[in-house]
Length: 102
Image: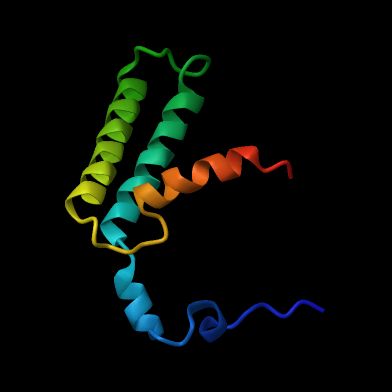
């Protein structure tokens, strides 16, 4: 039977759930998720349903690049945020994710 780890086991009991919630970069997550979502919409809609040069597709791609730029800017401006999804953490684990045989 599967028994997942509790919050205290995962985080060591040093911080409360509210303190862990405050450590998350909510603005960065918003820009990361919205940028990736808009990029995927632009790539999936572009080509067959809509021409690549249509206003809708160009707008989606431009706004997704702007959201990505805002995410990178927030990562550079506030590097003291210790979020699990910071840009440097994502870049540092990328080779591990790409070389995993499973």
